[in-house]
Length: 299
Image 1 (cartoon, rainbow, N blue to C red):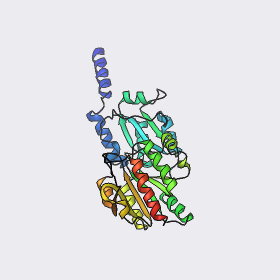
Image 2: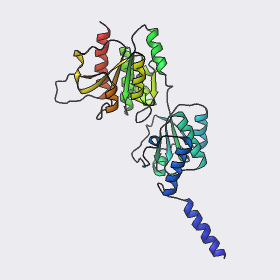
Image 3: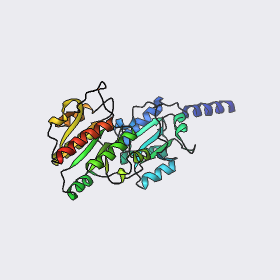
Image 4: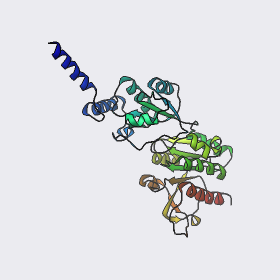
């Protein structure tokens, strides 16, 4: 009798220790989505992302209590990394908070979290905190009104390199753009590396984080703006009229501007090139097109 009880207890314990990705944990994720209404996309597939890394300059918060309190305190969390397959109560609470705050969630293996952890006590959750506060679209329009200038915003479609983002913020400040707009998902946020690459411009040029770039463009069009998209197949920028309240859209290196975002733009501008290489670094392309806009606005 006693041996049978031990066997049953051992079996019960084995059932609780499910492997990442098993049926019970997948069901737990589905139940969480139904309870919170969180969209499926924020769960980043259900695959363990073995390639994910954290910039050594990024500020992070580790441990369940610490992350929970950070959300409660209203801190801006750029990204949340969670142990793949974990459906413990405290972790589900953190997920709900992240969903409410619009924070992207990515699932990683315990080994990957251990490698990223600075304390060794992450308890299955690591939060990446924004180095600077984000602005709002109204902040950008307010800056334009204060300077009595037409709105000039730079919109970035999935820029993932922090050095590129920092360089573009610096360019935005120099050419007189009122701010930079970035997406919440699949893009770098305001990390310490971004701040350093901006050479201090991040202190003067607001960065706005939005849920959907395409919908944001539609919203801004209703407020009188029009949009030019940087793309190799467009009309040479020097042949276009780039004056007025304008939004300049730049995509990531390699992929460029996404199809949906490109379709929302009014015109497509290309940068004249004469060399053997047919593409520019994203921050360089943004700088070249931004200066053409500045030239035309200065006439």
